[in-house]
Image 1 (cartoon, rainbow, N blue to C red):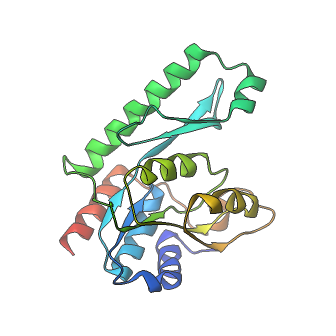
Image 2: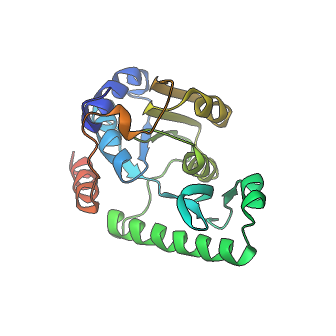
Image 3: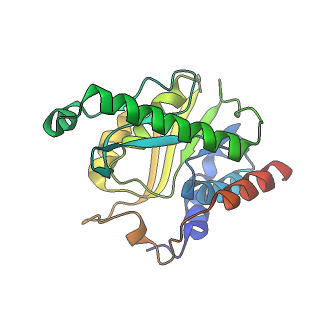
Length: 214
């Protein structure tokens, strides 16, 4: 059980200390992942940026992921759960509409968080993808695929908590995976934090600006 995202980030940074001085770039998944990523970036003395990924919600159940989409030069290359889509009878029209809706939200977050600045350069560097936790891993996989297209030398996925079956699925996607806790049963990411308030857009912007100044 973590007290909050800051403590989780500080504990995660200790496990990532071997990356200090390795030209690492920390990419956090907003919103909550930015709080964790900020602590990691400060400890490693690495730049901090965001990587925006969004879940594609099922018809009538937006919390059920039928896939995910992430920012990048080819955001239309979405990751889909074909078996679940077939079982739910998801129509091509619904999928197009949901992808367009999430791409619009991705664009909004990029503009709001980066303030017009370019995305961090990761080509040839160690790219460290950080979140406050992973449940199903749909958004994380989409983010990893998008990140891979940007040509990093190495991708490290680092999270405080995730279910062990999700960790097994994600491990082949990266060169290194660090997860502090793999509790069973896994109920939700928030259930493993004492304080898990929703992170606001304003907090994300403030943390990114603070990281740039430092």
